Amino acid sequence: MKRQILASFAIGTLSATLAIFALQPISQETPANAANSETYRQLNLFGDVFERVRADYVEETDDASLIDNAINGMLSSLDPHSSYLNPKNYRDMQVQTRGEFGGLGIEVTMENGLVKVVTPIDETPASEAGVRPNDLITHLDDEPIMGMSLSEAVEKMRGPVGTSIKLSIIREGRDEPFDISITRDKITIKSVRYRREGDIGYIRVTTFNEQTSSGLDEAVTALQKEIGANLKGYIIDLRNNPGGLLDQAISVSDAFLEQGEIVSTRGRHSEDTQRYNSRSGDMTGGRPVVVLVNGGSASASEIVAGALQDHRRATVIGTRSFGKGSVQTIIPLGSDGAIRLTTARYYTPSGRSIQAKGIDPDLIVRQETEEEKNRRVTGEASLRGHLTSEEGEEKEASGSSSYVPANKEDDTQLLYAIDLLNGKKPSAQAAANKQAKSNAGVEQGTAN
Image 1 (tube, rainbow, N blue to C red):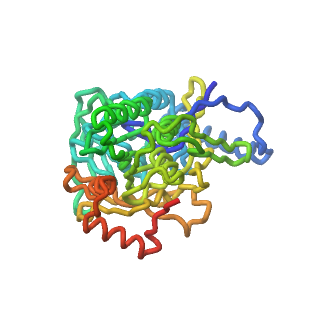
Image 2: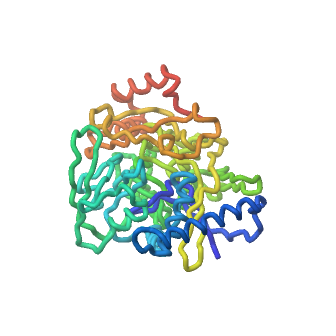
Image 3: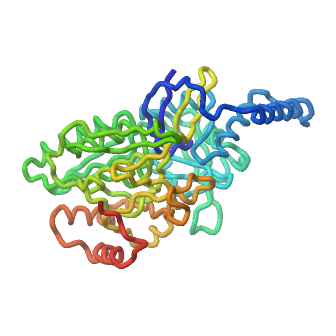
């Protein structure tokens, strides 16, 4: 039996998985804190309650559903990212990591009993219909979400390709809820896109699935061939990238590093610590790299940004990332699905924990518009029941904007990165942001 380790936004999805996975054998050792007699007394209490519900509830109950919900309740009470996956949810999750599946194309989590949109995936029905990060979904085809589990809500949003569903949405900045109808489609996630920006290679990574490492190799090779000796550097755009597979995050980081640690994970016990190191040479030949992040950049994105920042291999530009720094392990339960359990925190090469803090850019550059102010992602620290920062709640940080303009001409962060690699003086607004960062300690980015 194998288990899969997730080190990203381990939440229910309708598109690319928010998890980071690596396969390892499950330990068969007895836990050090094996259950004592009081624990078994409590388990007997659960059995008594279960039988009372079966016998006396006003309507006939389904035993399997009661047990599934009890297991999920136990796990979801731990933190926002632990949960139970029934057999169908587990199969769906495995399909998602391959980057092709049916659905709407949105990453979602649960907040105060409602489904909260983390981000719509580029070029999917949800994105094209105008769904935005931070939207709260209250009803599905007029059925209230309050009272559903995240898995149940996700299941209702899935359906045959070509069928439609109505989402009722509450959006900050609008006085009244409104409806959006979306037609389900086959979601094929092209995780890497690239283009030439003058003598600069622009590479957009939307998620970390099984195709990401090969997609990055293709992008770098194509840009080197197209631009040739005039190539000045690369922009790696991780904005609104919610995470993905651990081995892919490591491979992407490794592509820009000659040597050194990329990320480490630390569990409850010292023997649970694992370190992942760079193994191959820098495929870009040491050319300058800029990494773009924002409030929608989570976990795998934060691993890449943190590794390149700590090794001084890249300049990180944008706004503070989400702060998802815990590791979830998918533990299969045979024919009964799997559990998703938080088992560790992950750390950047310098030993920084990102949990509930995020990655602070080297250069804070905002999209100074009213639209940006309405697109702020509140971050891991705002999630109910989140793992606190090891430095205490007072050291935790809120999120930042997830707004990325549709037009390049309006994208202050991208234009700043292009100017930086071209050796030009930044725009007036970007320069003002940089000065504000240097003057305000709370805004100070980390330049390790």
